[in-house]
Amino acid sequence: MRTIKRYENRCLYDASSSSNVTLDDLRDFVMQGIEFSVINAKTNEDLTRQYLIQIILDLEALDNPLFSKESLVQIIRFYGGPMQQWCKQYLEQALAVMPGMWQSTGKQDV
View 1: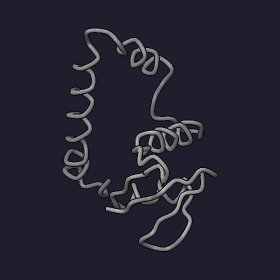
View 2: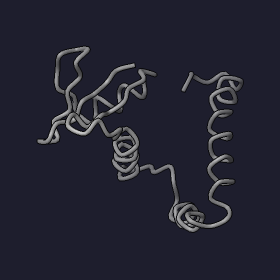
View 3: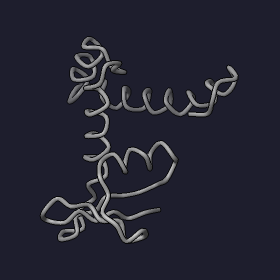
């Protein structure tokens, strides 16, 4: 597990490689299966989710987004309602099963 420290100037530093990292580097870590956490150097607050969401936002801005406008609207509507926990569990289970389904079709590993 790599710990990436975010400093007040928003600079990200990976002590294991003694180098600064970018959002693209974090995306590469995800794609390579390298586990990491992003921690605020001053407060020790875990910022990992925020950076993962930013990576998704950047990818969604490209030509071939994963989420349609309609699916995003539905996800937003689930927040704060009685279906939020169910939606979270459903998405987590579906995403956990997908790599195995992808492999069974003979495609590359995701």
